[in-house]
Length: 394
Image 1 (cartoon, rainbow, N blue to C red):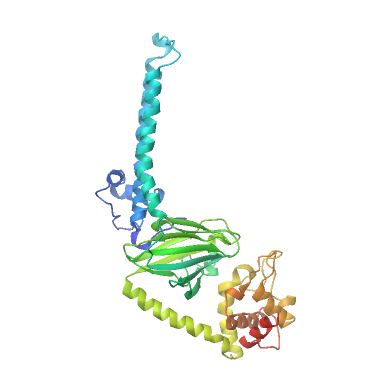
Image 2 (image 1 turned 180 degrees about the vertical axis):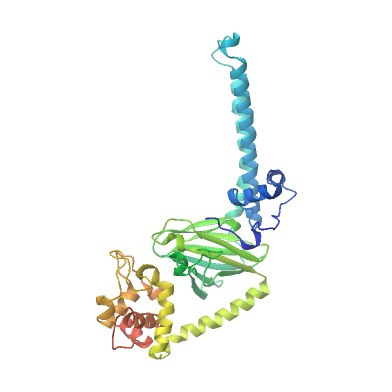
């Protein structure tokens, strides 16, 4: 699926072309007119929103046109030779075993062509891997099936953390309602970065191999558990930029979109301070006591965001891989075992350990919700303090 950037779609908008680039001048001719622009948007690389992405696009077009010229020349010579030296016009095959001059030429010419392509490509690759001197550092961690973003300080300590999950509704996915413009490409909490600042991404995985890919930034790095990869970007213009996990990572691989909001620095600062305040308040929830109604409301939100993909909206799951919660021994049995299952996960299955993803209040709420929904009935009320006590006693 095309990782499109909202502000650069070809719906009546002009695709910016660097006039100083020979390659872009050529592609400008090749995509002239509405038909050509549509073709470029659908089948060609995107020009992107960063200097690196422009360089990658220019290299792509530069090499493409070299290949086109070589193809035209080779097939023209072949066609001429086949037609003018056919047997029907009396052509007689030459008898020779080698031609030193010709062999030198067909060795030197391709070598020069390769050097001509390798030189600018190497310069761009060196720039792409120069991750030092960043203005902002963000850890990107892939989960099945969502992304976690951690904003780090100079000592690599977490200052703000949140998960970004698919916002497309289950009704759209199951064809119960019309699909929106950004079907499977919208999230509840996008990644927010400032423009004209060097942002370094530290990329890893929590469970299986994922891949963090944003085509308009010309970045793509595998998120491998136990390994830390890095990549960087400087976004020139404000906008909404979209990507997806591009490594097959399980059942809901197609439901892991990436949405990046690039905003002016003052807007970024205002957003960051607001989110930090909310993050601090969220961490305080573990010391609160909730009513049953509050737990049900929060639990439904947590369940919809984290559990519904596997256990389904009605709690009936997708047996045998994703068991039902309706009437299950876990959701109707011992509460401590239920809390431990949510907190620790279950090794060898798709059940993740949510202890590192949710705080005590969210775990308490989702456990309470699962024990009082889907036809399940329980007399207990699970509070954050109960979760903390159960976990500490493990």
